[in-house]
Image (cartoon, rainbow, N blue to C red; front, side):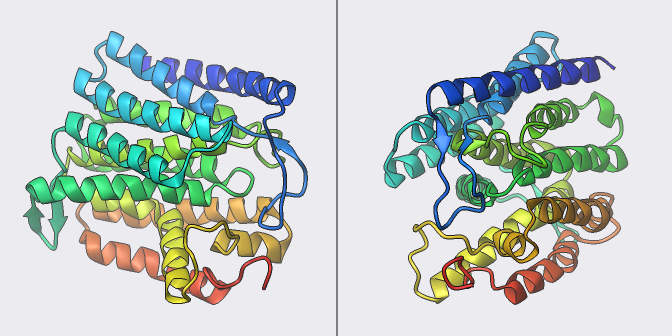
Length: 344
C-alpha cells in the first residue's frame, strides 16, 4: 500500500528530526527548567514536537502530489497547523501574551473550517443534525478548546504522543468498520501520517524523556487532531461522536479540571498541576504507569465503544455517556482541579 510506504518514511524523518532538534536545544539552551508545578525533576531540552509538525506537513504535501488528498484538505490542515506551530515555537523560545496566542488559536480554527467547508452532520438519536453556520461557530470554539486541552495534557512522558498514536490507529479501525473502501479514503492516509509522525517522536520521549514536545508540538497535535475528527466525520454522521469518544481521557481530564477550578474560584489561566494524570503520576511516582494506563483505557475501553457508535450499534450520545462516566468519576475522586502539588 503506497500510503504505508509514505508513513514509514515520515516515521524515519520524524525520528531523525527529533534527534536533530534535541541537539539544537542543547546547543541553544532551549531547556525546560523544573519548578514546583512541574511533573519532572531534571532540566530537559524542549521543542521536539516540531519534528512531528514538519514530518506531518511534508507528508501532506507528498500525498497531494500523488492525488491522495484534495487541495482543500491540504489547505485546511496545513494552514491551521502551521499557524499554531509557529506561534508555539515562538512562545517556546520567548513569550507571547496569552490574548495574542488565543487570537491566533481562533484564527487557525477559522482557516481550518473555511477550507473544510462545513461542520459535519451529526447523528443524534437517529436524527441527522446539520448545524449550518451555528455549527461553524461551534467548530471554531471546539478547535480552540482541543488545542488548549492538548497543551494542558502534555505534562508527563509519552502521554501526548501516545494519545495521538492510539487516536490515529483507532480511527483507522473506525473507518474500516463503518466506511466501504476505507483504505482508499483520504482521511485514512491523514491518520496514518499523524500516527507515524508521532511515533517517530515518542521514542525520544518515553519512557524516559530525552526531549519534551513543547507548545509547538502539543498545540499542533490538538489543532490537527481536532480538524482530522471533522474531516473523518464528513464521511458519516455517526463518526463525529465516535471520534470524540476516542479522546475521552484528554477531554474529560482537561474539562473536569477546568470546571472544578472555576467553581473553586481559582484563576484558571494560572499554571497548576491538578490534572488527574498529574495527581496520579505523583501518587504512583511514575509517568510510565500513568501513560500505559491511559493507553490501556484507550484500547480496551474507549475504542470498542467508539466502534459500536461508528457502526450504528448504539447512538453516539449514549455511547459517550457510557464511555466517559467512569473517567469523570476517576477525575473527581482523584481530586482533579483541587489537589495541586502545593496542597496534595
